[in-house]
Image (tube, rainbow, N blue to C red; front, side, top):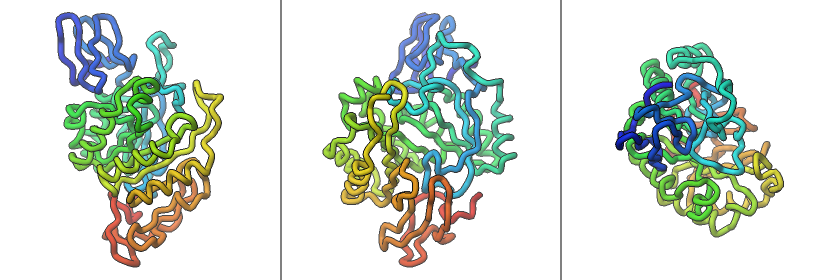
Length: 342
């Protein structure tokens, strides 16, 4: 265990200020995330340097389509999450409870070793993903700081429920984030995610203010967030936050406690795609739809095909070294888009 960042003492209790739950934790108890523990007045992160998953992934898998396309990301996660989504796609590792087997985590991998792994595999970035990076913030922070010094980028794949204080702290080292915007109804967030929608929306806007590149994913779950009015509300919010934010609309498949919910009909995703484009978003993508042309990046100005994709594989990348469209010279939004970063 390692002493946590961003907490304060209130008598024998500790107030965690890392995520927007702001848990007030009694001595000997855990926060909502189940991985932050009040050890006699000291808040501890119980899985520091104990990853449950490490892999080399295409950056497109995060999904991040406008951050170093075609490059590799060293992905890392520890157990746990501060949300309790019943449709979680990675529930085996994210929905950890402190009574679970103590062998749930892998062997110790110190931050220096994580960065060395990224360098060995020629990864352009490190992605804190699979579970929720906010709950292993200290580990992610220490890795990210070392990675930045080595010229390696850092990306969060997150539910966006961290505090502004946490974002201020990680900002010098965090280049990009894909934020799950799981719904646009306060009631759904409260009942299903056990969280507040406003906190996620504020994080998206604040990341933008801080200069962090943001992409947003919405997993469309039949019967939960597939209403056309709600999809329009998401699209309009994103346009307001920045029409250049790529919106990834992903197809749900039955998982965890929603095994009786059917997969998202392709027609629903196509309608959401149309809603996003009509609202004025420059880049809308459909996920978990192999071979669909919506996986490609097109110029928002002239509709020229810029990056051709099949699944997570990049075909031709025609974006110029100036991050512009070769046909109309419109500037394409993102970071290191020309494909020269591998």
